Length: 255
Image (cartoon, rainbow, N blue to C red; front, side, top):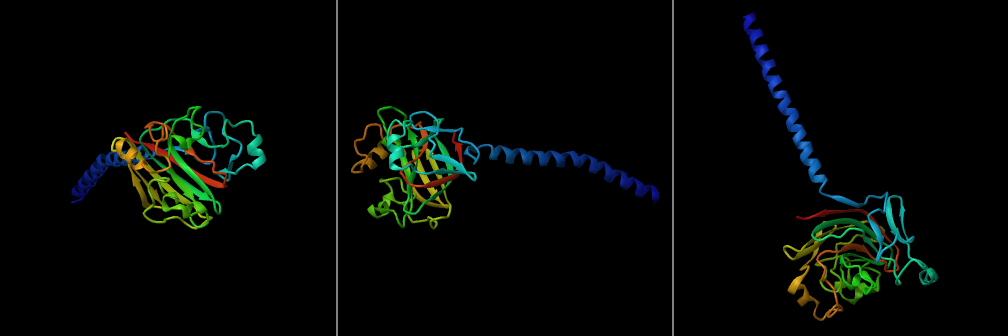
């Protein structure tokens, strides 16, 4: 009996040794898979650096965009500063990514000041003949829906709208002073885009081609040279002369 028990112990230890490496390997595989998924996202602003950004039409990030407590803050210049600032080529201080993007998912958080207005652009084409990003780029609106007069000019001007083109299905914004989250998907392969606002899909739209051109008819962009024509372009944040905050900006490019 003693020999039998010892034999059982030996067999158990043998199986344990064989299973041990497999468990470790499985753990490594799980960690590697999680890491790979996390690495699909690239940070465009992590609270420490503006290395991924520049002024629209080139140059360093304008001084009115600063990092405070890990948040990207646009503090609008005074009329005098705006008039006399020699660093701008035109009248605004929009910023854009240094890199161009085509198909992607963009995630960011924003907080707007009372009665404030801003926006998130994509497909920005930098050319001297286009003085502003909005001349070529589509925009998801950032707005104080309660207090900004633009919200009263039609729901296609409210937060989460494809500006002046597609109204939000509902107002999913949080009260002023709280952070909101956008997840914007742009996919030219399927010609589909959409915007999630605080986890709620509030707008969907074509991103190019005949469908977009048909949608532009009768809008303020009808007949604009270059508008919505660039499948590859920069992502931009708008200077609309209002205090606005952004954080946790990251992007995942789609195949």
